[in-house]
Image (cartoon, rainbow, N blue to C red; front, side, top):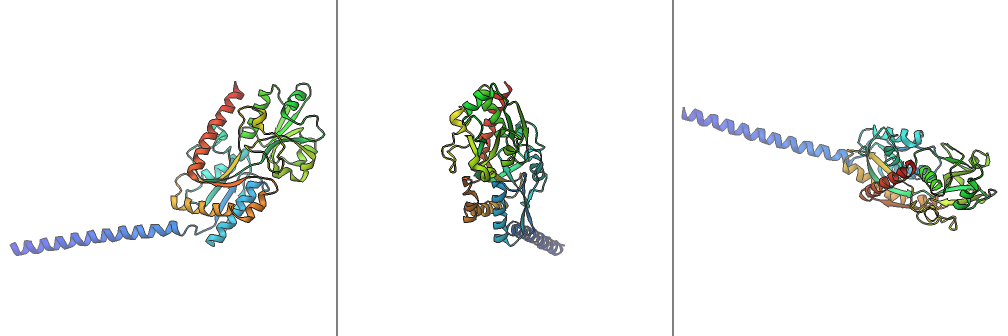
Amino acid sequence: MNRIADVNMGVYAMRAEWIAGLAAALALSTSMSAAPAFADYPERPVTFIVPWPPGDIEDQLTRVIAEEMSKETGVPAKVVNRPGGGAVEGATAVAQSDPDGYTIGSFVIDVPTMHIIRANATYTRESFEPIGIFMTYPFALVTLKDKPYETLSELAEYAKSNPVTLAHFGYDLIPSMATFAAAKQLGFSYSADAAYEMVDCSTLKNGDADVMNTTMQLVLSCLDDLTILAAYTAEPLSIAPDAPLLSSQVPGMDLTLWNGLFVPKGTPQEIKDKIAAIAEKAIGSDKAETIVRPSGAPIYWLDSDESAARINADYEKAEEILKFLEN
């Protein structure tokens, strides 16, 4: 009986060792098979969503990033323009996509700030993770040179006794809200205003508005016909260095309007790192510099941590502007 027990114990020990070995092998196999899934990213086409019509700086730079991704990985990458709702429609498409790096948003400042504050968004602050911020818009308030005002103070005096209409990219966008807040501080209001998907030279020349918010990229063809009433930038515009800053004319309006890349929350870090490396290389390229040079838009790369800090600060600033307008 003792010999039989010894044999059984030996069998049990061998079986236990075999099971333990099998478990270890399965764990190793799982870890080895999981690692290449990130290392091989992307294995199928990647889509960058720009929530505006094509043509502006963020659209062109996002295409440079997509081209660099195709070049670096050998996998197609494309840009899809999904305008609507002041960028909410395109942002929603990204928020509802899988967190796998195959859908990437190219978003303006309003997507993770003002739209959430104003409850216009179908997403939350936790819906996205920033990959990096890569440009500042050369944003400005402009008018035709035949108008009898060249600064915001002159506009304010004129508007107190004459109708002045405003064109902008949409309500509840930070540049639009800043424009209304600046007017309130200066003691006037616009007689009428309207939101457009595209705000360019034709908006003024067709008589749709007297003044408008836009980026310099969209008015380069008529720049000689314009007066820049205020630049919404931290530093003077390189292509119009004499244009007065919004912040120098209206205290507290020290705004910079940026664009960056975002992915759905939960996207693996390895994938985010790969996207960031490709995007940073693309933004530092001669092609990117050639695109922005005519408009004077600053391009750079803020990493995910720097971008998150910037977003938090801008969120607080957007709340301040909104409170001022509502009081």
